[in-house]
Length: 120
Image 1 (cartoon, rainbow, N blue to C red):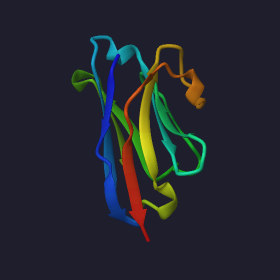
Image 2 (tube, rainbow, N blue to C red; image 1 turned 30 degrees about the vertical axis):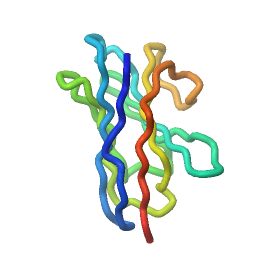
Image 3 (tube, rainbow, N blue to C red; image 1 turned 120 degrees about the vertical axis):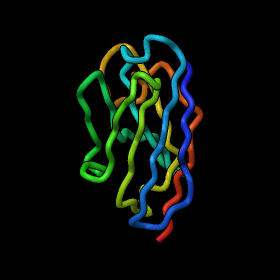
C-alpha cells in the first residue's frame, strides 16, 4: 500500500488542522493506520492509531486529537484541535496488517510526512 499525507501548515496556538492520509490499494480497510510525529532533534513518537473500530491516543494529545477513517475513500484523518506549540513536528502516517501498535518499528508502510507548525 502507498500512503500520502497532507493537510499540514502553519496555525496559531489554539487553532485546528485536519491531516489526511490517502492510501492506494483495495484492502485498505484491513490495515491498521497510525500517526506519528517527529520534532527537530527528537525521536519519532506515537500520536494515534486506528484499527477497524478501535482508537488509541498518546496521552499528550488525548482529548484534543481525533483519528478517523473513511474506507470508501481509502483515507484516514487526524483532526487536531486546541493545538499547542509543542505539537510542532513533521507528522507521518503509517500502516501495517499486524495489529495496533504504538511502536513505529511495527509499521511497514509510511507516507512522506507533512509539516505542522504551531506558533505561540
